[in-house]
Length: 292
Image (cartoon, rainbow, N blue to C red):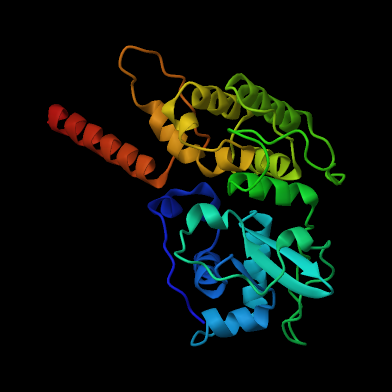
């Protein structure tokens, strides 16, 4: 059953969303209307294709590719319970305010196991991708961002259950970023958070996929602590990545009576490029008029 959902303006300026194809973005939006009031749905590309793309020439294999990209970007979590596959939209409670939500009939992600092979699409579709592994870390991180985790303020309680081992090789640059943000959260007066797999994935994606330098991310963390942004947002590494473009624009504005630490961008936006091209054209025209 389709449901009425809301979409925030920040969706269209999110770097995470910008890295997706148009079809993947529409599938993500469509999942909001397809999922129940707790943001959960059966993870079967055939069912999702029938619900979201009934009149389009797209296959279940195409939709499975969309879901794999959404999982890789940490926009959804895929998990299994008793050999049945489910998915949940990450940060659901943060983005959807539902009046009198219904109780979900589907199990929660914290009941999930590591996902086996991807769900079936059709016998002749070979472009299948493995599901993301669901760890206890991802549940804790998601609960913290939705305001349901233990602890107070911007950090998570250190009394959470032991974390599952992270199979990803340790990277010093990623660890430095995570430790930097954790230290700033403590300095801000909150409990020290656990550095989860979700944190490391977000830091790695900022460096490898978003084109940020380590110095730029450190600058963003420092700027956040001294701004109103920190007081109005629950800080975590995934949140920092999601809001990086907003931070860059805010930090680039001159602050009255104070210094601003600019947050650089390794790749200019389309608007910046067009403005620069327009200014360059105007300069060339003025030069031609002066020479005549």
